[in-house]
Amino acid sequence: MNAQKKRLLGLTPTELKAVVGSLGMPAFTARQIAQWLYVKHVNTIDEMTNLSKQNRALLAEQYEVGTMPPIDCQRSVDGTIKYLFPVEADNGQLFVETVFIPDHDRATLCVSCQVGCKMNCLFCQTGKQGWNGNLTVADILNQIIALPEIEQLTNIVFMGQGEPMDNLDAVLGVCKIMTADWGFAWSPKRITVSSVGVRGKLKRFLDESPCHVAISMHSPLHEQRLSLMPAEKAMPLQETIDLLRQYDFTHQRRCSFEYICFGGMNDSPAFAREIVRLLEGLECRVNLIRFHEIPGVDLPASDEKRMEALRDYLTHHGITTTIRASRGQDIFAACGLLSTARQSNQSHQPHLPHLPHN
Image (cartoon, rainbow, N blue to C red; front, side, top):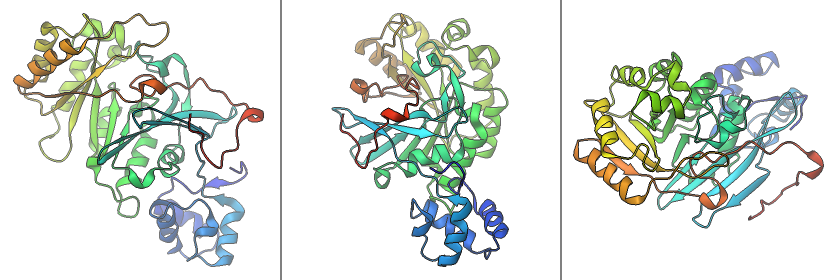
């Protein structure tokens, strides 16, 4: 990428109209550019062949598409692929991890929205790396558009590095481009945005976006959740659930709760009863997740039998509950394992016309 040029990726037709207007180009070219970016997924301005050669040259003087291919990848035995993408940063080049998860006729992309995370949940590797900044709309979109398997994608989840509500403007911007008729024209049902619960921001997301929402619960008890997730202090789970009750999840939009099972800590019948009490009357589902160890954190993993008992109890009491299959564990792509530890070292960065199959 050319540091002297601005990125077209991430701009809406309105913003593109301002760009072409400033260059003396016809207003209708804004829609043409949007189509090249979000429908045809071009990587260069030269590929925008229904713009005149003169206008392409004019645009290229100050702008570029701004896509950046992944610089590395790791492939799991189960077909999951973890990509490493470069992102723009004032303090040198940084990287985020993105996970592609194929599953029969479904292919999900788990995208990152921040470099690191401020939430510092005890069980999550990303938080251990600290926080190095928000991703731009272009940085998040690049994980989608520059994905080699983009044509296979059926779903996107904002469950990678970072707290989406902590970078809400960019997340909403991406959701708008993904669902707009001038953009990807996806149904909002194909996009899920997760959150620990951030005061004010979660409400704004629910008001402004029709996409699914997934809340990181992990414990129904205030003190225990606080010990696992410092964000519980600023927005307690009960307050999050009270907010969710103000919205309709009986039609297109879905509400779900993510629940990592820790052996002997939050997977007993007493916890199951408390979850039922908390969620009574709320149209939602619960996803139970196996815990994968991270360095320096002494938390036990639940066994299959206890997870199945928890699932069966919740389901019996009217809460649709599933045990999420672990994917990509051998390449550290499973839930909570994404890391931002890799730093920029341009002398050792590979130039990759083809990705390595690690």
